[in-house]
Image (cartoon, rainbow, N blue to C red; front, side):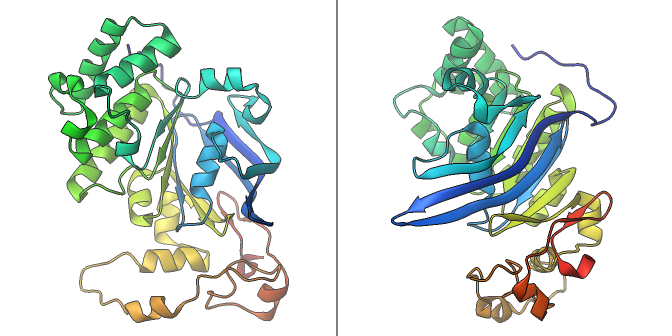
Length: 326
């Protein structure tokens, strides 16, 4: 059963700290760097959004934390500290005890999460049996209690995945992720295939999970407006690198990196006319030089941006990778 924890008044303890992480994929005879020099920390009770377009490295980052990277991926360097323990140095047996128990995961595609020949409630019962030693019948009762909180009739735990709508499947995925009362939940684009109303319901559930149980959440999305609506802090990624990191309110009020500014400009506003032709003309190929990775799309690019890669500059409470703020 879920047990409420005593909440701290401040988010001053790191539950997850990623340090200088670099991940490479082998594609044919070539090696491609998917994540480069990434360092970020998530405090207890924090909702941290990781935002970026496809190919930015955000899902690779989540897979690295769970240690479920594909076979052609290799972690070149770095460490992933979870509650003071480096996950990259743990034996697989120890990692299996953490994965699904202390770290929950909500996948982007709920349909791919379930075994089609198992009742959805059995997935939760199995999870509790493996990680908590809970009897199967008791696990089903926990499943009934969980989904009831999410507005789903308890009898639906005895349905098969194909009998549920997309929204119901996603809510069952959330129930699976929190059934063991994890300290960290990784939500990998959990609202992508959902309608706007169901999206808001999922976001509300995630906030409730943080507020009631003190769970930290790593919320991965390509939608900056969605990230700003739920998160305490936002990390913006582009081309495998962190280009900006700031509290959500500061980022909404004053985005610093040109890429973040463009993402905010893409959010529709009332009485605003967007010229989509401008975005269609922009190249999304990464530059071949060792300069700024965003230089070929940046409206402020200078000669130095093409020659030298900017560091992640600390501005006191926020960071940005841009020569404009040297």
